Image (tube, rainbow, N blue to C red; front, side, top):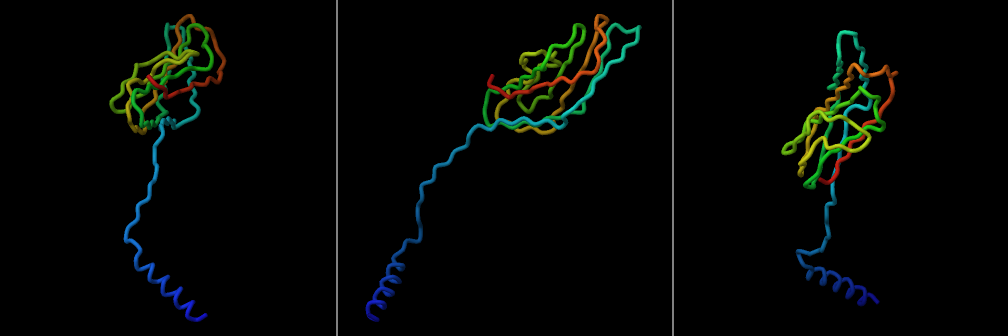
Length: 157
């Protein structure tokens, strides 16, 4: 019995001596699409008070910043508001573009998607300015403060 155990131990060590000093392993890897937008602030208050001498009144807000990251080409950011505004009142938005892209200037928001930044290709941008402008003309009716939601989407061109 002792011979048998010694033989097993000997062959066990002997076979370790023939182990290779390298090994190959096949690994499948991949990276899926990364398309992220994030904004720095959740709520903004824009309130207009007109005096009788002005035909148009505007209020600006520059307190919001956004970040973008994508590993894809031919993307754009579109924006829309959840509900139509009363006649004579417009809400505009302008996003500073990341490197290589361009914005469409101040764009009036409506209840359907509109391009605000186009020609986005594999980029990471941080602390990019979001500018809002609330505007009314002499035809605007009084409107009590209302919550409106602006939605931004990063989509294919």
